[in-house]
Every structure is written in C-alpha cells, then in structure tokens.
Length: 142
Image (tube, rainbow, N blue to C red):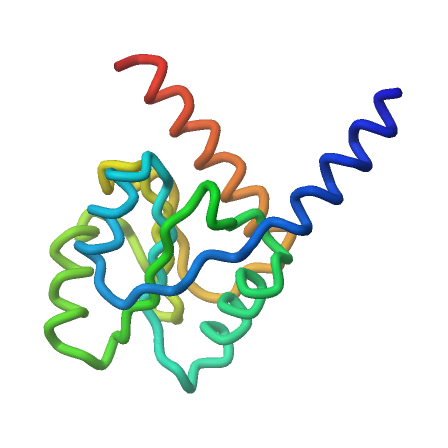
C-alpha cells in the first residue's frame, strides 16, 4: 500500500504545472506573500548555459518547483535596475562568480537557501526540499 501511495504521489507531482517566470524581484516576493508560497529567484543571463539548464529543470518539472508552491522570477543580471534590486534584497547571500545566482525565499522574501553556478537536478531538489523544511519550521515558530 505504501508503494502504491508513493507511486501516485510521484505521478501527481510530475503532473504539477511549472510556475510562470516573472521578471521583477519585488513583484515575485509580493505575490509569494499574497499566495503564501515560496519564491524561486534566479539572477542570470539568457546566453548563460548554467542559467538555461536551471530554467529547463524548472520548466520540465525535473525539480520540485511547481506553481502550487512557488512564485518564480528570472532576473536579467545585465539590467542595472533589476540587478540593483536583487543585490539590495539579497546582499547577505554569499555568491561566487558563476551564474546563475539563485535564492529560495519564504513567503516574506527571507532567504532560506541560495547557491550559484550549476546544480544537478538531484542536488537542486535536495536544496529545495531543505528550504521547504525551513519554511515549515519558520511558519510553526510564528
């Protein structure tokens, strides 16, 4: 019975719709707050292969970033205004020098996890699940 439940849960999660990509950090965080969802904020470039790989994993549901749990934003690092807003909101995060820079936030915009560069689907899934756990623990404490 447990096996059947696991198979059904995995099938349902694979059918979940990928969120639509926004392009504004503040709007994404505001929407996440209104909808009580997590944020998945990616700062990158269209021509960046690591950024493209991350977007593809989200768009093809290879990682658990779905519209029922997340609001997502794809921020262009070459747009000075967007980059400044991202840097202002997430200046405490320690990023390296390889794109993309990704932040997973709670519904209020507080960073729960962050990384830069390429991550495999398995590694990104672990990071996302850890962030979800932190978000749940934070909600319980409030």
